[in-house]
Length: 85
Image (tube, rainbow, N blue to C red; front, side, top):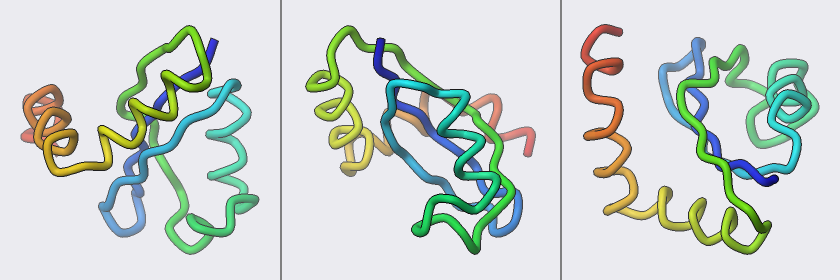
């Protein structure tokens, strides 16, 4: 199983979208500073994820969620949660 995930930085309030085959491990890597691209933005909170059967599907979904339409989809999907931050 592969996962596409959205993290919220509790430091700067920005988002990070990624994909992995081990969601728990990857979240731990982000929060312990092992991911260079997010090192200065820790800590992170997992706010959304989707499961995919194949790695290729997860990568395609990640690319979509990083696009303008994908960001709009996530804002609509998480509207109630984001409004209460």
